[in-house]
Every structure is written in C-alpha cells, then in structure tokens.
Length: 158
Ligand code: NI
Image (cartoon, rainbow, N blue to C red):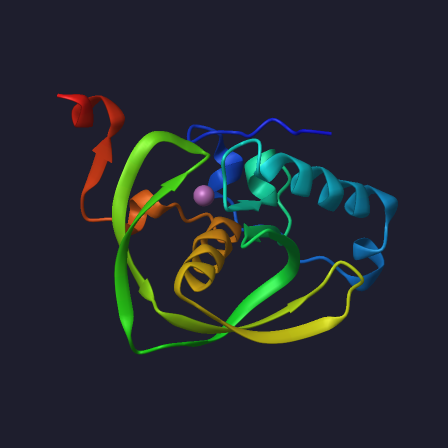
C-alpha cells in the first residue's frame, strides 16, 4: 500500500521519533509498515524515507539506492568521517526546495534489520548521505536546517 507523505508544516516531522523494541519490530503492524514504506519510496521519487514522513514517529527508515531497498531500525551513526562533502539535497517532505548540505563522506552505522538483528556496516558517498539525511528525520531535523542556501523551484525557473 502506498502511503501518503506528510510535509513541512506537520509537527510530527519535528519530533524525536521513538525507539522500537525487539517485540515491537516483530509485530504485524511494524512489518506491514516496512512493506508499505518500501512500496512508497520509489513511486514518491525518493532515495530514502523515514517513518515520521508517513506520520509514524518511530525510528525506522528505508534506504532505496542501487536497486536495493533496506530497512534500518533504531539506526545510529557510530562514526562520522572527518572528510566532508557538499551536495544538493531535496526531501519528499519539503516539496519544491533544494539546498547544498555538507555531510560526512563515509559513516559507520549500527542498526537493526527488519528481523531485529543487529547489523553494522560502513556507507559512503550517496549511501552515506541518504543515511545521514534519514537519521536526521528521526531527530526532527530537516535538510533546510543544515543548508546555508535553500533554493525554491519557482526561483530556479526565472
Ligand atoms: Ni527527507
């Protein structure tokens, strides 16, 4: 089921999302939400989707790059590379706006998968950027908070 995505004025986007226990991860409701979020992200035109963006304030994100869709639950960045990169970002919850954001080029991530198993991995480049963007959503942070210059679609057309 494709889920509606909430946008910037909705206060859920500004909340700190709640951790999920192992029992909660295994519930049909959460498993269904993971399936629905995976179905939603690509048609919505995204490379990632955080649960608060579909109105559910829990620590769950979907990353959809390189033909793979992975669910990360209770994700944490345990190491940020010193090396940073600046690139343009947008967000499904902030329609019509883009902005350059400086982020770590590589990050080490600890999370749980959809079975609740603990996983650790290193991500770089776009993968690292999307993870940092999505984890920001779990902390009520949007890319516009991190970008020094946000460009609106209308302004670009001139
Ligand atoms: Ni976003």
